[in-house]
Image 1 (cartoon, one colour):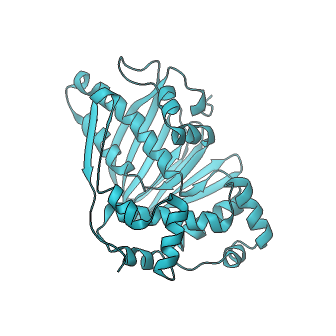
Image 2 (cartoon, rainbow, N blue to C red):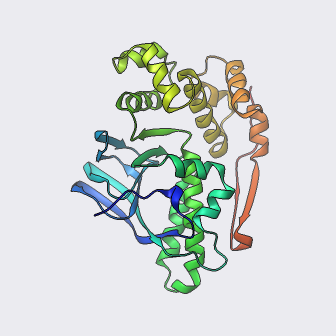
Length: 309
């Protein structure tokens, strides 16, 4: 009999690959099942629906490209692809101890507040939009796993898996679905679907057929913030992603995200990040980081230039 894996309880253990595959599905239905490993399904192309039998009842998560679901052990779930979809799937099991020179999951949590918080909050499952290049790390893991010299790549693979969870934790700022209150989940889905529109709190409350006061309580209890704060934070996170991954002028990003003026975009962005959009773009023009004492190095460039015009 399986039981939920509590990531916060991990000490010397690490998560390691059980299997990893990239599949193209056509009109596919996988029946309800569960297993004793954590599963991550990342949609690269197309659409799919994952149905989950969680503690609070049956849930359905409709996934589109650049969205992914992480499912804990012992959770019954099924997969339905009505037309076609390309899905990366990684299954992770516990390993007794990390390799020499490789940080354990617990040590990673100690150095990453966002990962520690994610480990504490993750219970049954969660669905996210990829705002942190989770896709890139998953593909690197996949490439390493395909290499024939396993001994040479084992340390790199294990390190990448730990990095993967740090990146997943970064995506938790924009959750699309969780195993919490049904009304709260419905509100999250509506907000994320209409995040580029000038939505109102009343509109959200009407959509899920509850009062504004009830909606406000849900966000206070589940998100620790007001509905307006959540909407604004989500808009800014999406804007940050566009600044990182495109060379669009900032005024175009502001318009795309549904801001009524460049001033409102400027003020909202600075309130959330402490710096202006221009300053943010300048700080991310070139970044590099090295982890695990040089075992894994990654460098990337982001677009420079642009400004509010």
